[in-house]
Amino acid sequence: MSKRASVPEQRRPVSAKNGKTEPERKILMEWTAHRAKERPLIAIGVILVIATALAIGWTWVHPLISVMISYLLLKTLAEFLFPVTYRLTEAGVTGEAFLLHRFFPWERVRRVTLVEEGVHLSPFSEPHTLDGIRGFFLFCPENKDQVFELCSRNSPAKGKRKEKRERIASR
Image 1: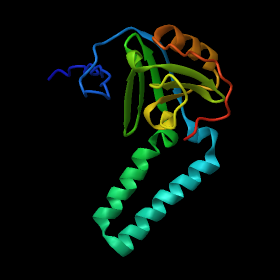
Image 2: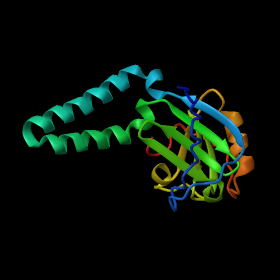
Image 3: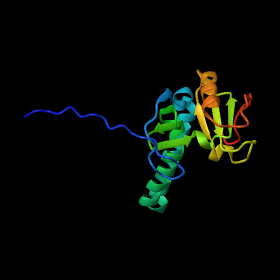
Image 4: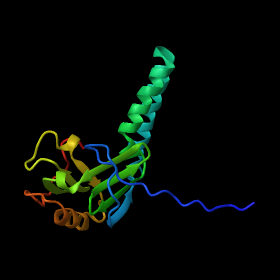
């Protein structure tokens, strides 16, 4: 009986706009960031909040609703709790983690902003209230200048800015 070596399936980025799989493109840069590792006390607090929501919901409401609320909290906070692999390709930017897969094509980028902890890509040419929701934040404190240059070069953004802001509105 022979064992066949399994070849890992290549995951292709899925466009958030239409849900279709993007073609494989050349990877320009790739790195992994784990925000919870850098802020362990906040991570412990977040895990305690999720566990408390699960326990209270299980006890007082209904186990199914409790599990759903905990899942939604976990999915919302996945970018903070789990390691995220960011990938800059010719097609756009991808962020992948447990329960998280985001793709932001270069065509949607209207503004590239350098901030304290990384680079923010926005679909708006001017600062907007929805930047934190509709944009894409690349957490890269060690190599943010290199990421900023790559994003500026690949995006058709008209309002490329190298701003030093403390935080994006929702971060």
